[in-house]
Length: 278
Image 1 (cartoon, rainbow, N blue to C red):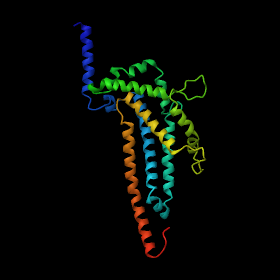
Image 2 (image 1 turned 180 degrees about the vertical axis):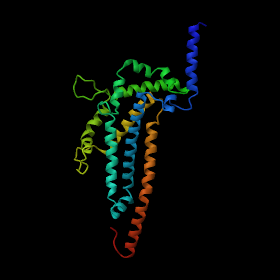
Image 3 (image 1 turned 90 degrees about the vertical axis):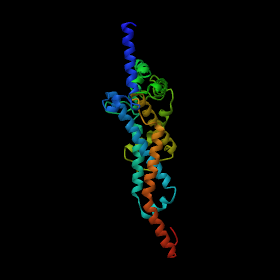
Image 4 (image 1 turned 90 degrees about the horizontal axis):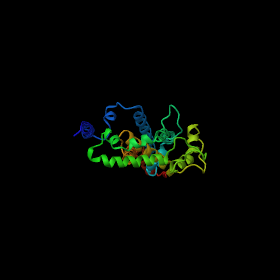
């Protein structure tokens, strides 16, 4: 074997050894915390998207609880602060999800910056290359699979995102307009929340709960795809949603337990005294 061939083989063996020794998905840099600026940016972007999802799942869990006896208990005991908590959770979810796909600014964490990175064809080639996958600690048996997944993630990011949102026909437009359409629908609500006009009643043009839900979820999906490409590791978006929802439901079930017990006791005493339930 020639010296160049030996050197190439040793390089491949070294790369595979790094992959084999990875205790889990994620590059050694990601596990040790020694990330590049771009990787830290992606990590922070994912954390914000996950935070928005957790806030929204808490809002959803409160709504679920209020479909039962909790609503009567809250009303009977005058627990009006719950309305403020719900508004704060909705505000955080909407504003955070909106911010992470806002136009690029120097100090802003946004998926639009990722879209700008992906305008570089050389980066797109590297990010779907076998070596990119290996360097992020992927187990050897999954390298081919993850390479294909990265291609799909990159395609999805490029289809849904652009580096600059614009209505001008001369500017690039997303191939898949789903995120853009949701941003357009939610913009009046975002503006209202951002300017602390939460006491104003939303008019008939307000977005539906399902539209907000889809927007927050899509934002998380895109941030997760980005993290999986750049870091090689991220909690799957669906797993995070399920976990956040179960944690929120469990918390609010316990939080409402005491008010419900008090309301039940009060109602029992009133019935015993011949007073009609309210």
